[in-house]
Image (cartoon, rainbow, N blue to C red):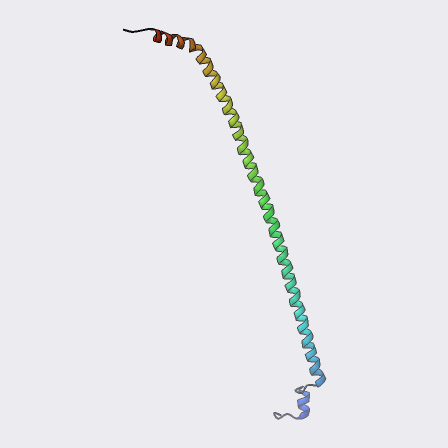
Length: 125
């Protein structure tokens, strides 16, 4: 026994008490169970946090999408609004030009008819 006496060997606790050995095993088993609980809780917390982060990201994406859709609709309404006013303005200008042409043509129509009749009825030999 390496030069140690039995008493010294017991004193140095090189021999284990059989009950102490089983208690150590029990302690190891309970420590292992506790470690498994800790790991399981950590996994559950991690999965909950991932789910929460995913929900937050989806909510933020939905808000951003709604904001961009509002901006797009506002842009379209502004463009369409000015387009609508352009169409109205062009219609008014067209009507004014048509009226102006009708007035001008009515003023000169008798002259044009007389001129045409003169050329048609005048025979050159």
